[in-house]
Length: 161
Length: 161
DNA sequence: GTTGAAATACAGACGCG
DNA sequence: CGCGTCTGTATTTCAAC
Image (cartoon, rainbow over all chains, first blue to last red; front, side):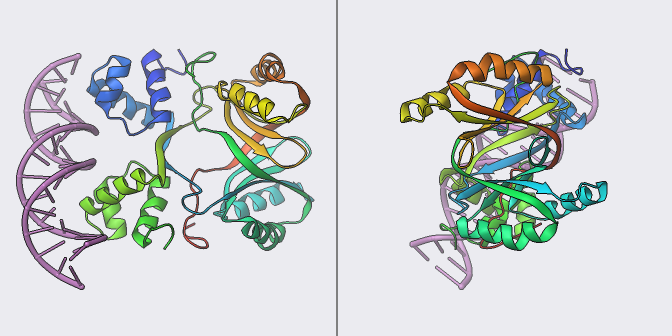
C-alpha cells in the first residue's frame, strides 16, 4: 500500500504518534488485532526504520523555558565546508531544538528554546554570532504556540483529525 | 531546585526526552535509584504536568512525506475573533504540524508536511488561501533537516550534550 | 492467532534519616 | 515525615507453536 505498509500498520503508526504509552492490547482493540500481532508489527516497523524513536514531551513552561524563538540566518560563506562547519556547531547547542536548511531570504532557520529574553540575547551574542560569519540575522519571538504536534498524517490524502 | 524538581527528577526528564522506551530499571541504573523509585517519580512528574505525553517519531521519508515547508502568513484582519478563527481552521489541518504566533514581518509560522511540491501547492491554494483573508504569504522549502529534536535542556544553564 | 514464560510496572508495608 | 527500598501481584512483552 505504502512502502509495504498495510491499513493496520498505518493505523498503528497514527495511534502511537499521539500516544506511545498504550499497551499492545489497547492498540489491538483499536485496530482489531491481537496484542501479539500488534507487538510483531511494532517490532517490524521499528526495525525497518518507520519508527525512529520514542520520546517524552515536556511542558516547557514547567521547566522554566518560557521563550521560544525562531532565528533566521544567512551565512556569508556558502561553501560546502562552511555549511558543514555551521551544522556541526549548531548540533552542539542544547538551546537549538531544530535547525532547517531552507530556501528563501535566509539559509537556516533555528528553533530555539531558552529561559527568558535575556538568555536569548546571550545565546545570539555569545554563541551564534561567534560560530560562523553571518550576513544577516532575523529573530521572531513566539507569542503563542497555536498548534504543537509531531504526528504526520499518513496514507494517501488525509486520515484522522 | 526548579519547580520542586530535584537533581534526580531532572536527570530522569533528560533521559526520557531522548528515549521513552527505557524500563524503569534501566533508568534507575543511570540515576542510581531503584526501579520503584523511578516509577513513583515518573508518575509524579506526569501527574504534575511536567511530562505532557509520550509519542513515537516517524521517518517522514519512509511514509512518503518528503516535503517540509515553512509557511509564513500575515493576516489582513487582526481582531481577536479573526485570530481565533484562524487558529481553529489551522487546527483542523493534518498537514500542519506546528503553528506559531510570532513577532516580526509575519503573524503566523506554519510547519507543513506534505507528500510533494504539488501537494504543497494544493495545500496553499485549496486550504490556506481559502481559510481567512491573507495580506501576505511567504513559503520556504526545507532542503535539509540539520537538527531535529524535541528535547529541551533543563536545569540552570546547559546540561548534557 | 493462541498460549505460556519471562520481564516489567505498580501498589503496599517497612525502614532510614 | 518525606523518600527509598523491598516484596508481592497484576500487566505486559515477546517468542514458540
